[in-house]
Image (cartoon, rainbow, N blue to C red; front, side, top):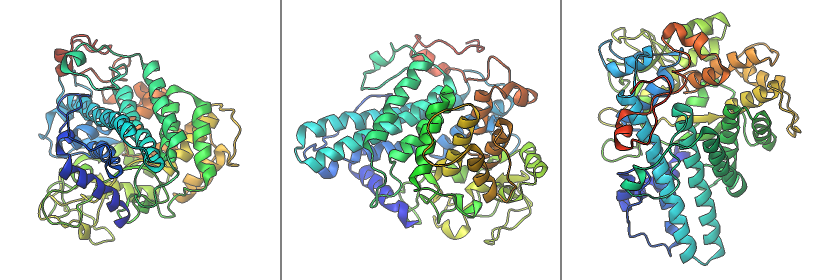
Length: 492
């Protein structure tokens, strides 16, 4: 766990010294802070604030998992049957533009955009005030780091909503209210440009601050974005370069890929940091992603809200392919006890909970609401990179391969870790492997949409083709800005 604390500490220092610009009031606006731009020790602070904007509180987590995963066939709402009716709307595809969770997800990612824009503009000020070569190098790296975070936010916005306003600088409320949406193709080009800056500028690692995003983070995110663009050559190129670097490897034990002990480890390309700092109370740079998914009605400290539970369809999928290793990690079953000695009570309302966010009780030290506050959100793992590489090649990518890997090799490296026999990298096999490997990691719904399989798979759950591929522009945003057109299929 110590490996991630250095980055967390930097964020917490910023919380103490620059609290104002973490309370982002209007999307993409920049408050005044009194920052001393002549001091090199301040350069990272605005970027640290951008990182801090990515961590999710209780309500933010529920919004995030509802829109990005509960809509998939791998997850159900969970919790108590009568709890969170707006989440149930998402689970059953009865939601509309007024759904509160859809509205909050829009705000979550635009708040990240705002923090990243502020960091980029701060680098312009540092560049004017700093003269040392090392200081200017830090400025350029931090600018690229902020642009990478902005690219992550826009990638989520475009795959959730489609065409959205492109805000890349500070604006007042009147300017924001007059913004129109940017075509999807232009948004993807903008994301590419931000990620290219990271690939060309960021270092390969940060020895003193593990968990910061590097050039390989930018490459992995660009490979994923390229899949959505059907830019198979770019996806293969970036994934191949990551493989060829030799810097990453699958954890021998699948469960370790999600453990507190192995955060920011050999399989990590991109994580969102969380820590209770070993404290039992007080302000902490924590993320509630794990807590919200913890077993409901279980005794503390192994307890949470119980949302985003594995569906029976996912359980049957694991059983049907003999995928016992990944099933054992992905599922926490009611009435069972973990190897670490934590029991999921028979009194819990759901049969299964998400085992990928499981954190043993010995880590849950806070005096109340303690569960999984040390759990980092895994955004991109090396297994995902291997599967992106295999998919791009299977789709016909024709770039020069420097890693020596084939699509079969990449696919079977993932399967071998799961204890499964070798297979051939057909598209259907790769699709199934992505489902098994990345279950409950906020990929499944968007994979089905980009594969053109959403109507077939999700239709029985309420999905409507030509409508539910995208989410509606929130009613609250259209009230603020009448220039925002409603997404096709939604009536208001």
